[in-house]
Image 1 (cartoon, rainbow, N blue to C red):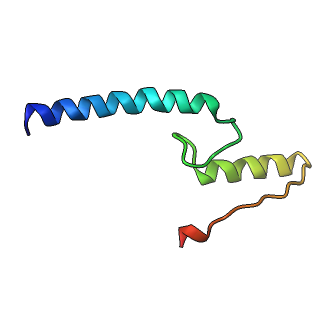
Image 2: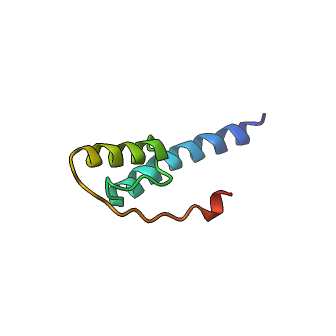
Image 3: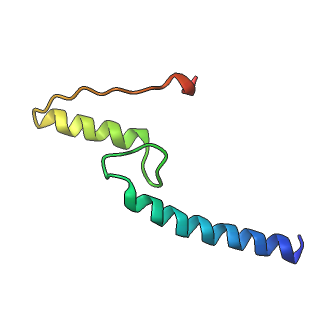
Amino acid sequence: MSVFAVRDRIVQAVLKIVLSRISEADVPPCSFGFRPRRAAHDALQVLVDEHGRGRRWVVETDIADCF
């Protein structure tokens, strides 16, 4: 691996960290899609917890592209 390839990877990693912090600041905490340390299971757990508190929600999803 050349020095340029290593340097490219370092720059890419730093840019990823900086840009993800900037973009995460604009995303509401109730959003779970394509976010670090958040998964579909986390979203489902929120629904289960809120249901246990007596809340009723309507959830609209689009999973067509998953198949």
